Every structure is written in C-alpha cells, then in structure tokens.
Image (cartoon, rainbow, N blue to C red; front, side, top):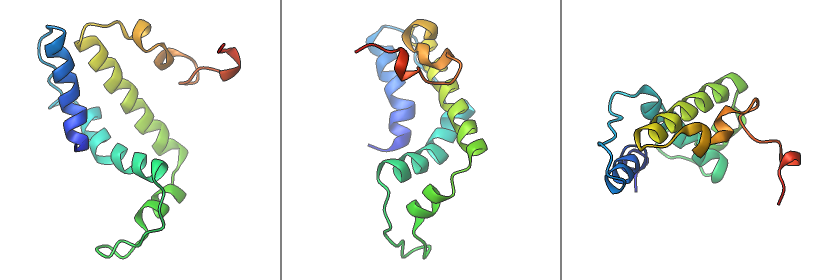
Length: 116
C-alpha cells in the first residue's frame, strides 16, 4: 500500500466505521508533507541501506540518513503532530486523551516515568 493511501485513506476508513463524516485531508499541508518528506525519512531510518540508486547515481538512503538536520526533523515532527491531532479530532477523539504524548514538553514521554 502506498504512503498516500495510508495517510489519506486510513482516516476515511476509520471515520466511516465510527459513523463520522468523511475525513478530507486533500488541502491539509501537513498530510502532503508527510507523503513527500516523511516517507523518505521513515524509509531511511527504518531500512537504512547503502544500495546504489542507478537512476540518480547516489546512495539515497544513506545520504539522507547521514544528512538529517535537527531543524528539519523538528519541522517534520510538528507536521506529523498536526496531522495526528487533525485526524483524531475528525474521527471523534479528544487528542489530549487519545494521544497525550503529543502534548508533553518533549514530544515523548520520559521513559523513567513510565511503569511497565
């Protein structure tokens, strides 16, 4: 399944199952950024590879992975957070309840504070 199908399609499916109005993300900039930049970042982190790309003559994933810059990653993270909040609200959830990690000070929960 393509990234766009997941980013745009899953929220529509969930909304339908929950009896909510359809979730239209077509004009939502963070969704488009996730498809464009997020997919490449995710692939580079999840499946790093030194494989040579014969089309552009680079080691695309390794080059991307080695070139990550904090401001760019923070910007993408903010867009992902906005996307998650938008979708959670659209399907009828309160994001502060359903995804509280979006609202903590650091964007993640302190592992030391969690109990197993």
